[in-house]
Amino acid sequence: MDSKVTIITGANSGIGKETAKDLAKRGYKVIMLCRDKERGEIALQEVIDYSNNEATELHLCDLGSFEEIRQFTRGFKKRFNQLDVLINNAGVILPGYYKTKDGFELQFGVNYLGHFLLTNLLLDLLKVSDDGRIINVSSGAHKQGKIHFKDINLEKNFYFWKAYAQSKKANILFTYELARRLNDTNITVNCLHPGAVATSMGINRETGFGTLITRALKPFFLTPQEGAETSIYLATSNEVEGVTGKYFYKKRAIPSSKSTYDELLAKKLWRYTNDLIKSRSEKNAS
Image 1 (cartoon, rainbow, N blue to C red):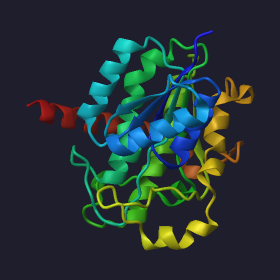
Image 2 (image 1 turned 90 degrees about the horizontal axis):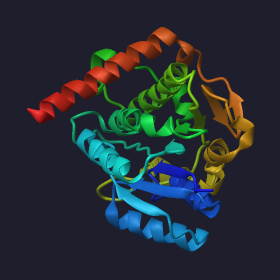
Image 3 (image 1 turned 90 degrees about the vertical axis):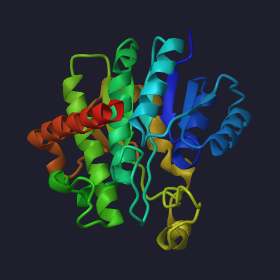
Image 4 (image 1 turned 180 degrees about the vertical axis):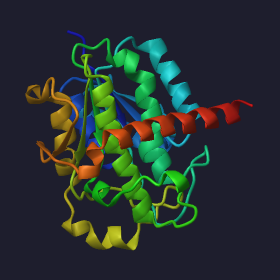
């Protein structure tokens, strides 16, 4: 039997790297999708050393760039005719205000927009799998989130936690809407809260300097290995075969915030997101 093909975004550190190590150990064909070449190569070697799975690969892609996402998916489709598991794990939370290459607030752009585009571009390969699985790593922070349609980049009133919560609520609305759209297919779509995990999410992408809160609370956080358990469970367990449109915590389906079940809001966000991506792509092409 051929190995299941898996893409894990943000696989160079934290939860993503631990997920990659576990799946590679199980014999999965793991594609580690990372932004930074140097850190990605170090993580790749760590995964291979741990798993003895030489088939593991590193691919570079900045989820803050629609063009890089399109380039990656075009290249991936030239080599693979099937995708079994897509784990949208990459995430960023920073105290300062930053924008993606496409001009969107960084946390919304990377945590949500990039994964929205990546997922939709890979749906045709997931449909080929007998058991296609999409797993979106969200956060309990979504409970404080609101989608600011009139100021999606939060240029008028930015606060890093407000931006992070918006992106994580968007992840869940996307999960539920995509699950409804794929209800008659072989693909399941679920999301999860990994818990408060000691990862590099609070690290400045350019300087490597961590936030004071992240460094002070790190001893009280879960380890990355513990935080990866639910992602691994959703990717591999027979218990969730056919289960879709759910929010998981500690390997159990639990309710997300009430507003995430608003189908009209989810559909509005879907249309809005498509328009954002289309308008930006057209602008970049002109």
